[in-house]
Each structure stands twice: as structure tokens, then as C-alpha cells.
Image (cartoon, rainbow over all chains, first blue to last red; front, side, top):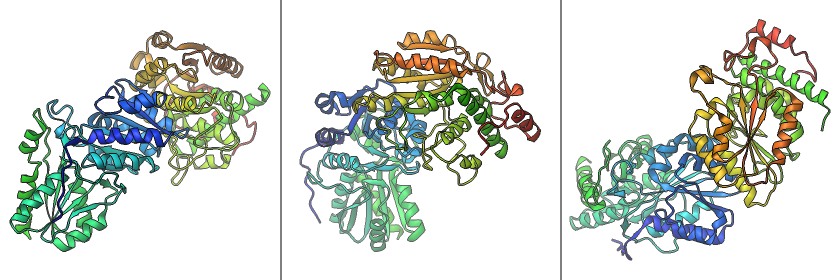
Length: 317
Length: 281
């Protein structure tokens, strides 16, 4: 097995902030918009370096999406920043008409996604955003797993012309992917090679999948771990190749079962290689207040849950 | 500037285009379109500085955004007659495989359209974004947008109106098609708008009224004044008092023709009131 080292826990939103800071220096067309959450989104450094390219919109997310769409007319590359809940559900029609249908080059950057937002509770913990965004024609949907990957993704989406939803989180989590990696939109990353079960994970669940693979290895079960940072467009080739070998799959995500990565994987497999699948996800429920670790345990979104799901799906083969 | 008689001829022709477009597919929105025919002609023929060829980024030219996208018939007619595409294409309005969708869109690549609109309340925000981009690009040209009066019931407008004043968007002229009508009836009956001038002023805008919003000369004079007021630290709002259905007697002063096409007989009467000037498409 490959060994992955946590180089020190960091929040993915700080990876976004670092990427945005770098873009500020390298791409003069990049502008940033924020709806009164500059500190939470780690946009302070960009704001301080480029005050004329930073736009404080106030608590008005619908207006922010429209302004971002308008700024592309004139060649700007707007990065909007607010929590995932306010980046998607609150402004769905603005994104749909002014950004997606209009084909505008807006980067919707969403922090505090999922249940690990923690103590603020269900009003702020969106578990439906991947579904909302992936349903929009032409929208690219990215959910990164750690600080380094989030920084790399932030840089990569500036070079891609089209609307993008970039999803990341609040808590400090393991930072284990390479520093200064090249981020390829739509290209899955195989983290462990295995033969008994494929674990397809996204976001904060990728590190948990690696931990689960170690536990499974101790039980002589060989797990292949695939990091799906891009949910749309999905790297179907990598998934099908892996499942052709293992004949079963576990999907793992910090998102509702409905509309998430798991459904996207099911669709791909149903069309080409129908496969037994287990889902590590929330199951049509809202979240609640608690620490991220407590919530991940209660809602079965951790390594233990992935191990259980793997054993279950292997038994179904 | 073209002389006023030829501009008025164009207005009459635009009315015919509107009526013929919606009649052909028995759908679309003639009332608001007719009410804004003079405004669109003045904007595209007199007021805006426009480049010869269409480019999405619109550097070094004035830009226009239509927020109330349902009045697409007047937008399409004036775009075509201003050279953005062939007037023959008006035949395809609302047909399958057409660039002239029911509501305007960039999706099919129609020259002259820079944003999709139809779901209401989004145009002022988009216009602000384009105005911010102009400022960043040191481009002194102006951003125009038109929205409906009933459309101001959508809350996003007031987010945008607050932002535009707070951020001193003085390269932005928002015109409100102030006809007092919406689908379900008069704005007073559906949801009263109150004192629009006072509302915009309270938000920090400079407000102008064009009381005869269906008179070309009044529009040109009022909008020219609005242009002169740009660059002074405040966004400009023009309350354009129009008559829905203007130019067709049985369509005027009512919401009944907001989203209804005339039948054959009604079309004949309406066209007879607006004889051919420049030639039908």
C-alpha cells in the first residue's frame, strides 16, 4: 500500500484563499466578490493586495451572482465567495439564468459545505449543493479533499473558461496531497491500487477512505481508493476500469444520498457495468449542531462507516 | 442623428414587426413591447455609442441589458433593424431551432444579446457587474438597462439598487418601463409600487421622469439629460412613463395584451393603424 502522510491539519478554505492570493498576482483579470464573509472565506489577503479588484457586496447573494455574471462582460474572471448554502440554494435561479444558461465565466467558490460546518447547525449545513449544481447544464462541479488540492483547483479553474462550482469546507483536516500539484479538471486520482473493492470518495471523505483502506488491508482486503475531485464532468473511464477489476464499489461523500456523487457513479455503472454499490452519505436528512467529528460519527461519514460499507458490498458480490 | 421623421417611421415599422412576430406563433408579449418601441429606437439609433461588429465583451462602446426579457419582440426588431442580424430572421421568433428564443438568451449566439433574461429581477445586478468591469478597464462608456415596473416587486432589484448607490455606479442608467400594468392587472391592484421616485432617491440615486415615454423627442431629450448626469458619483434612474400597447388603440391602457397575441382579424386592424414605412421583413 502507498503511505500517505498528513503534513499537518489545515482547512480547505485556506487552500482556496492561498490560491486566490496567487491568482491575484498572476492573473490581472481575476476579481473577487464576497457577501460579508471575507474572513471566513480567507479572501482577506486578496482584498488587501488588490483593493480595486475586490468587491464587498454585502449580505446580498443574489445581487452578487448577477454582478459576477455582468463582470465577465468586459473580460473579468469573477470568483464569488460565501458559504455553500448561500452560494447555491439561496441563489439557484440567479446562477441558472445569469450564469449557467448565459454561459458566463464565473467561479462560484463555496466554503463551509456539508455537515462539518458544525455548531451553526442545519440552517447553514447544506447537503444538497452538489445535486443542485450538477443538474445545471454546462456547470463544472469540483469538491476538493485537502488544502493543497483546493489551492491547486483554485488556480486551475481560472484557466478554464466556463462556470464552475468549487466546494470546500470549514474544519482543519489532513493535508496529504502533494504541494504544488497540477490539478486536472475531470481527471480522477487513484490513491491506492486494490482488487477487492473500489472506494470512490470526494471532499473530506477522501482521507477517511484512505484510513478505511488501511483497516481493510489489515483484514487482507485490498481496496482501491479513487479521489474524485471533479463530480462533473465525471471521470467515467477511471471508475469503470477500477470496477471492472473489483466488481463492487463504495461511494463516500459529505452530501445527501439524493443528488450526490454516489448517484452519478450509479448512473455510469448502470449504463456500462452494473455493479453492487454501497453509499456512505447522509440519507435524506438535515444536519444539526455538534462538532465536526461528532457529526461525522453520528451521520456515519467516516472511516468506520466506509469499512462497514466495504464489507457489506463485498459480501453482496 | 437621423431626422425625427425617419425615426418615427422606424418606430411604426418596429410596431409592425412586434405584431407580426407574436401573431405568427400565436404567443409572446406585445403589450410591453409596443410600449417601449420609441425607447428602443431612441436608444439604439440615437443615444448609445455602439461598435459596428458585435463582441461579447463590448470594449469601448455603450452596453444595454434587457431585464424584462419578455418584451423580446421589440428588442429583436430593433436589434435586427440596427444591423445586428438580418430582419428576415424575425420570421423565426419562438420557432424551434431559432436564435430568437421566447426570452432573449446568449445560448444560441444571437448578436446584440449579452445575458439571458426572462426570470425577472436580475438585469440591474448584471448591469452593475458590467459597469464595474467598465470602470476596471478604464472604459468611460455607459451601461444602460431597462426593467419593468412590476418587475421591481422582485427583491433582488433592491439589493442591486442599494449596491449601485453605495458603490457610486455613476456609469449606469437604469430605465423603468413605468406603464403601471402587469400580468394580473394594474400594479396598484397587484402590489402597489408606492412612490418610486422617492424610493430610488432614498437609496441615493438621481431620478428623472420622462412623462411622455412614447414621444421620441421627449425620450431623446430626457435620456440625453440622464447621460449628462452620469459621472457625478450617483447612478441614474429614469422613470419612463409609457402606455402599454401603445400605437394599437385596442391594446392601449390595459394589461390584457401583456402576453397575448392578436388573431388574424385583430392583426389586420392593428397593422392598418400602423401602415408600412420601411418595409416588412
